[in-house]
Amino acid sequence: MSRLKREQLISAALDLVDEEGAEALTMRSLAARVDRQVSSLYNHVGSRADLIEALRERIVSDIDTTCFDGRPWDAAIAAWAGSYLTAFAAHPHLIPLLATTPIRDASTLRMYETVVSALIDAGWPVRDAVAVMRTVEAHVLGSALDIVAPGDLLVQSSIPAELPALRAALDPTLGESAGASRAYQLGLAALLQGLRAAHAGATAA
Amino acid sequence: MSRLKREQLISAALDLVDEEGAEALTMRSLAARVDRQVSSLYNHVGSRADLIEALRERIVSDIDTTCFDGRPWDAAIAAWAGSYLTAFAAHPHLIPLLATTPIRDASTLRMYETVVSALIDAGWPVRDAVAVMRTVEAHVLGSALDIVAPGDLLVQSSIPAELPALRAALDPTLGESAGASRAYQLGLAALLQGLRAAHAGATAA
Image 1 (cartoon, chains in turn brown, yellow):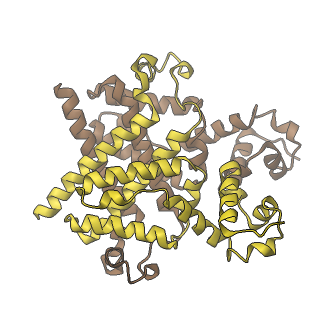
Image 2: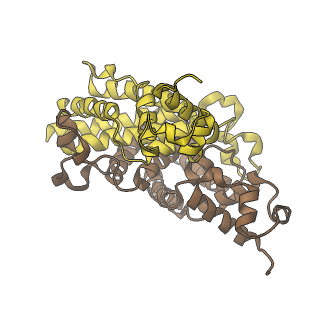
Image 3: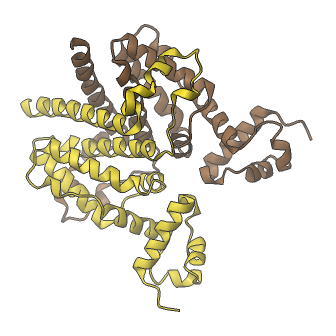
């Protein structure tokens, strides 16, 4: 049996979460998956919490932060949000797991430093910078759950006749207008517009 | 043994999901929890999918839609979002489950009819009504995951000195300004402001 490498173990953990959900991730289930004793896992990760942070590091490595190099803050946030959405939509079971565990991974904190620095440099008050970043993340993660849903959650054919407004709004001839991706785009554009207004107010004050 | 009532079964399913997560919800695990044979559950629910829709009905019954009676659309959406957040924050494991399964529950569809009707009556184009509703839901659900996280995900004491902007933005003397609840409020206000601008554009066109 070849020596188990840490990166292989993290990949196996990601596969396990992708296939069976976050609650299926235990040191025991992971050991079974890589055909090792539980004790041997501790050569690579100190705990399940460590493993979760390693998964965070893996997914954050797919998020582009080069958009913060020189672009206006709102364009940079829009690009970052798109990259963030793509990264998490590929691993939706990680969304509730990573959204609800304390963040210790160094690469994630460096990403946040990049975002918060850019916001403060653009004139956002220090006290607002984390909230702005955090609400964009929440918007993206909620939208990612909607986008990854199999099929579509709401289709006209399942709406009874006594709900005429909903039926009309889900008319298939409207194309993708009622779909999750378009809702995300419409919402992100609105969120950014509102944030631009708040930014203008804060920098004028 | 007393006769099992459907509402008791749904309550047991909700407790199971609250305690062990969505993936733990199977007909077998639920039968064990209520000390019945799996076959007897089928007197009350036809399938696991039925059970999920019953959980959706239960949680939607906690969401207030009376706010759509006569208030301006944006104030109504803000009130609905707050009620929606409270309902799901009480049962966070339901968020990924209900966000990714097709919606068949009649009470949920009636709620959507109320929201979509109000938006269309207020002048929103029919093709935008579902997207507006849906992006508010995504914003709320992503924020709810952030708000229910135990402790806080990001605290200054865990940020190394080489990330000075993030450390400054997480200064505890700024109070709750970097917290999840304030991020939600800031984001919802921005989202609604952007939606009001889009609505003004659409109704002027």
